[in-house]
Length: 132
Image (cartoon, rainbow, N blue to C red):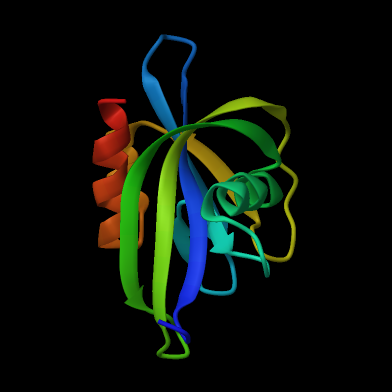
C-alpha cells in the first residue's frame, strides 16, 4: 500500500540481577504513553535496519537482533494505515539519555510491562518475547 506508514522496533530484554526477565519501555511525553521503542523507516531502509537504528536512537542501547516477533497494524494519529514490525533484541552496550521524543526508559518485569504499556499490541509482543 503506497500511503502505508512503515515502521520497526523491538522488545528489548535482559536478565536482571536476580536472573529474572526485564523488558525496556520508553515514555513519550508528546503522547504521554508508555510503549516499546520503535520508529519510521528512512527512505531506502529495510525493516531490520530501521529496527536497530530506532531502538538505539530511543534507548541509547546498541542491540543484537533476535527473532521477529510479529507486526502491529493500526491507523496513526493522522489516520494513515501503519505497519510496525518488531524483533526481540538484547542490549550489547550503550546508555539511555533523555531526548525530545523519549524522556524516560524503564526496565520492568514482563507483568509490570503489560500493566504499563498503553497499547494492546505492545502487551501481546511482551508475551511473545518471554518465551524467546
